[in-house]
Structures are given as C-alpha cells and as structure tokens.
Length: 408
Ligand SMILES: *Cc1c(COP(=O)(O)O)cnc(C)c1O
Ligand SMILES: [Zn+2]
Image (cartoon, rainbow, N blue to C red):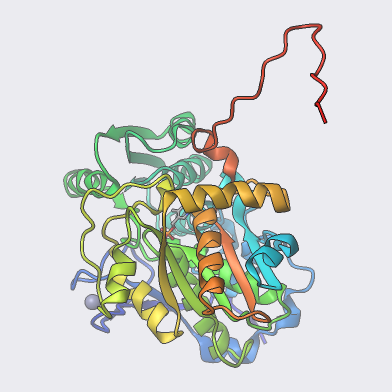
C-alpha cells in the first residue's frame, strides 16, 4: 500500500455546491462564497490509522494527510502546532466547571494561533507558485503571514488599522512586508487590498478568500481530539472574529468522524464575541443565517473586532448544527478575566482568549454548561503581545532604598 502525502481532492463551495480543482490558484467561488478544501476521506479512512501518528513530528504537520500541501518539500514551517492542552483546576473551581481545559496557542511562533493559518496558507501558496500576496489584518494575521512569507521568499503586502497592536506592526515591518496603515477598521483595509489585488494581480490572502488558511486553523480541532485520547469534549469556546478557527475546528471534527477516528455527539461550539462587536451573536439570537455589518465596532480584544465576516454563515451553521451558542462579553468582563487567569493559573493570556473564558464563566452561571462536562477554551494568543491592555504602575524605589515593611 502506498499512501499519498496529502489526500486533497478538490475545492467545494459550501454555499452553491460548485466544485473545482485544487491545483491552481483559486480565490472565492464565482457565487462570492469561500471555497473549502475536500479530501478523499473514504480512502483515508481505510489507509490511515490513529496509531500512525505515534513518533511523528510534534507540529501540525503530523496530520499532513488531512492538509492541502501535496509535497513535503513545499512546507514552510517554524515549528507551529501541538500546543499544550492545560487543565485549569483553580479557575474551574471558581466557575463550577470541574473539567476545564485551555488549549494554549500563546506558545505558537509569533505568539498567536495565526501562525497555523499562515504556515499552511503560505506553504500551499509556494506549491501553487505564488510570488506576491496581499492581505488586510487586525494585526496578528498580518504579522504571521509576513513572517512565513519572508521564510518562503514571497513578497507580502499588508494593510492594517492604525490602532492595531503596535507589536504586530513591528513584526510585519521587520519581516520586510510592504506594510500600510489605515485610519479605519479591518473592513476598510479589506477594500484597499481588494483594489490592489484587482490592479496588480496579487494573490489575495484575505480571510477565507484563499481556501487554505482555514486548513491550518482546523488542526487545533484535531489536536484537541488527539490530546483528549480521541474522546470528545462537551463544549469548545472560541473567540470569534472572522470565525476561521471555529469553522476550521468544526470542519476537522466532521472529517475525523468521517474517517472513523472519533464518534458520538460533537462538542457544542460556542462563538464568543465582544459586546462592542457582536454581529454573530446578534444573528444567532435572531436565528438568522447571516450576520449584518456592525457599525462603529470597538473592543480591547482587537483580534475579534470584525464587523462583518465573509464566513459568517459557516460560523452560524457550525453553532446551530452542534446545538452550540453565541455569547458576547463586555471589555470590563474580559479584562477582569485576563487578570483572574494570571492570578489563579499563572497564565498571561490575550484579551481574545480572556473573552472566551469570560463566556465560559457566564454559561456555567446560567447552567448552560453543567458541572461534569468537559470544556475546552481556546486561548488564541499570548498576553505579552498586548502590553497596552494590562497597564500597571508599581511603586518606584530609589537606589539603596529597602522594600517598605507591611504594617500588620
Ligand atoms: C484573529 C484572532 C482571533 C479571531 O480569529 P478568527 O478565526 O478570525 O475568528 C482571535 N484571537 C486572536 C488573538 C486573533 O489574532
Ligand atoms: Zn459558490
């Protein structure tokens, strides 16, 4: 038996069902919806076993059969993936959730899970012969794509809002990207990129406008299953901007079920947003299939400040089909949670991850999450990337001065 490196078969539109080949550059379906990668799952179910993972590299490339890169030589990697699944016992006690886990993406290269999408997206771009790409970003994705593009020798053009986290700007600039700031939101950056793509023939690496970033992000779902010994959690909470991570996790679960690696009821997927930008939550509350543009969006959790997502219908589909939920939390709640998690568990997580934890607290309080259920919260990045959201002013000592003794 000779196995393929990748079982990629073709691309398919989840809106109109149209299919097309996966061996040339593709962007959106002619109907305007994102294209998704499909694999030869029937063959994979026969050829591939869970045991074959034993001894493989400790990165997301351990799942290469279910990834779109056909040849190992095209892989562009910085060692991304296989992040820890940590138990959070003290926080869980505080929430009343005895089996609470954090999938900790702060340990990925560049400090956010965006490296997963960039690794697979850029690798596939290399395989397709792309030389120049462009993308709008809220910061982390642009930083990650700029870094992986540099490693691949691809030219990256990145447009981000002026007030995106400063460190992501430095990352992209240092990596040699053509970096532009815009006095507006990611949606404004998106329009500028769309013009550049149309005029200069660049590869459009915008969220879901190329089909492979999501394939990198879906590996979070595969890892969670593998790390739980192929038993499914009851609930997964995800801080949702463009929603690619959530759509990806759901896609991974369906694929794993199809090849027979997992069975039973899928976890209830929870899309978490900030109250200052909650289009998916609003649509879910109104039982709609798509979201509406959220005007004047604002939140400290910058990565989830996405007023209208191209893949909104896929996020909502994943939530409805798993009997999940969509929850909004305030900036005050998420910043308080960020502090709590550092205090109770010693983890300094990003504000987006903290939003997902704040939602877990809420859902436990409401009885939607029951004690005894296994709950996985995605922390999508490192707190150290957002120094401006965690300002403290410790007392200053003069040289030679001693630490004041506490009066008890
Ligand atoms: C981009 C980002 C998100 C949102 O990811 P989507 O998959 O686009 O919804 C969440 N957290 C952080 C830290 C991010 O950078
Ligand atoms: Zn279509």
